[in-house]
Amino acid sequence: MGQPILLERSQPVPNLHAPELQMLLQDMQDTMEAEDGAGIAAPQIGVLLRVVMFGIENNPRYPHVEPVPFTILINPEITILDQAREEGWEGCLSVPGMRGLVPRYRRIAYSGYDAQGQRIEREAEGFHARVVQHEVDHLDGVLYPQRIKDMTRFGFKEELQHYLGC
Ligand code: NI
Image (tube, protein in one colour):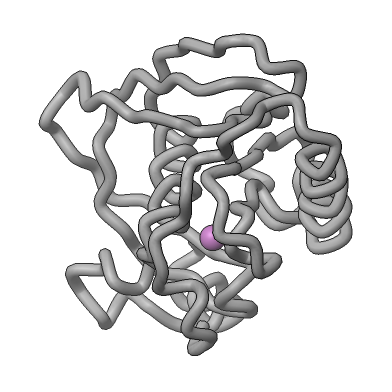
């Protein structure tokens, strides 16, 4: 956070079958796994293309959330299915060591393309919907601290865990 590229809007991927795209996906996956991330967006490794990936299974950074299948999403689109929002704790590999309480839409549909160029269309709710909204925000230059309503609910992970049990 502070790196201007993270505040820029990313461009759609023009060719789903370009060899460079596979290299980008591998770099993103390696980075996400090395950092135990729940997700990552291309701008976080300095590439302004509309590519995200996410997935959570037995993640030590998120021990209490329901599993989300590992998903690559190229040129993602989100449709809000329910105007209701709920607050939940988020972290980000671009904001290391911190957590914040962020309102997100509870239920969404999302679509995009996988690494083979196949169309993906899904509905999601809860933490799954949260992760997708967080990652797609990165493609529009938005970091989660910009979404926090109550800044007393933003701080160092260890302190928040100790005092709030989050
Ligand atoms: Ni993030």
